[in-house]
Length: 310
Image 1 (cartoon, rainbow, N blue to C red):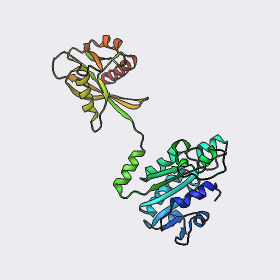
Image 2: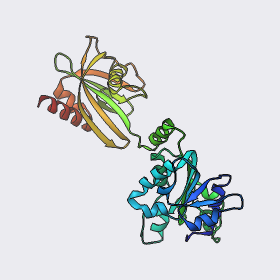
Image 3: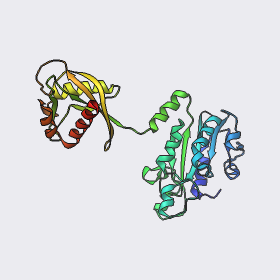
Image 4: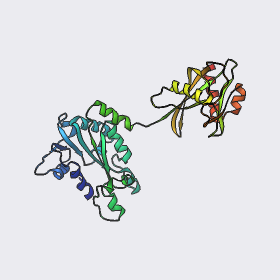
């Protein structure tokens, strides 16, 4: 176990109070053993199911596992009791990159390490960059348990440590797993045409351009319902939602846009309901609407109508 003084000081703190402790590393087992607590040295795959209170992968086992790191975390979850503690130490990627260190094994940054555990349902208790605060002061490697867990320092030390709790039940695992997934904004809009073939358009007073009725889908709202709601709020038109015409993905903000065909349910003239957002709504002949729409929306409408007619 070649690690900093700060890391060797941190690991015993993280398993304090745990009785049945295991680790694959003989050096870590020796470090953690106390008169009141024996530490079992064993490979993770050899541990019995649900019989370990705390498992410490403190000798870069996750880094050595490389592409199989996630499988090792799954084995750890099997061996730990519900709400058992997993402690993992890995080489810090940002530190290695900043110092030009050759990557002979897998390295991690703080976000990725938390995600690897979260994907298996572990609830993250904390992350540390042991010795980062001391290095910032120009001092020798030493542990500062609070400052070394500061978000701005997590990638500023040779080693990165995370502690997490095994989920108590499948519901807990799902909660932590979904929390690690990327979040995308979902928006829905209508390509709404009346019996004369005119297109429903609105003027966005914030952006200062013409567009089609649409917006972000609310939580617990189906995209089709969101498109219907936006048509009413922005144009004052009740619509029937038809086929999904197209799906567009954009990187800023990270979102997907669903365009639905729609037809008006009545003949009332359009009038914005949310006048704080929309200053005008109108039915326009298609050619005129396409020239008036902002370029991106015009392209989306053209693409959608071409696919439908084709």
